Image (cartoon, rainbow, N blue to C red; front, side, top):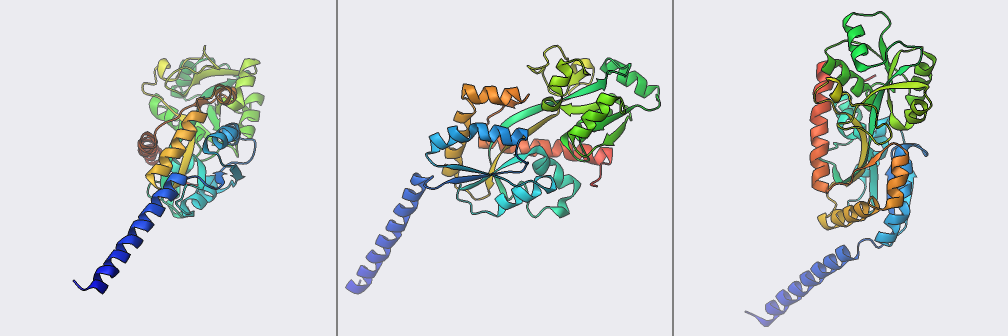
Length: 328
């Protein structure tokens, strides 16, 4: 082999080795700049409060500032769309709720500029928020058995209010109808607040609400809690049985949100982020702040979160089809 050729090959190998070492060093150096977390809800909501409770803990572990940006709208499509289009380097993350990852694709896929499965990398589930079926104090309904009996007797005026078309509360209400074998009218409100106002006033006899919106009203005796939607009883309402306990076998529906990164984010970076979030979610002060909301910390591995997203998508996709739920 000619010396010049040999020297050229050696130079090529040296350059390739240098590039490989640089890549390894870059991966090992992660993170070396601030990390942005896009929250797909306005300030003050449950997801926003949870991520801000974790913010200083994450910053301490990752040794970088954590910048939180609220980018609400289009059922989470805007904020998570921005995450999906960001560089897959671990410096842009998103707080994604159940709706944008598992419901929106079945209601209005055409309105989404990204595929939740293909374009995102799950990092961890953050928290779960159960729902509760409530009745107004003006209503004679005092149990799930009462609801089902009245529905099967086709009692006029029986309806369930919820926080809006396609929301987790809407799907929980539809799941109640399916599991109970009834056809109660479902009334969509523009958010949880007006649904809560109307059930308090007795304008609608029943409502499916989240725990943060209802626990104080239930505690004050202004609303009657008939059943919780989780698989097991919740700490804030220990005396309220689950819907499954009351004859709706297999009933489970919770709101949830977790952390996602752009697809293609290096596995080592995902692993680093997951470890930081799991550590933050085990902090006693953070756990207390989350539970005060009526939520429950629920850290997972990236793999477990990915499987959870897929199973929830199948579950709600089937219900949406069977119940004939359409996008507004």
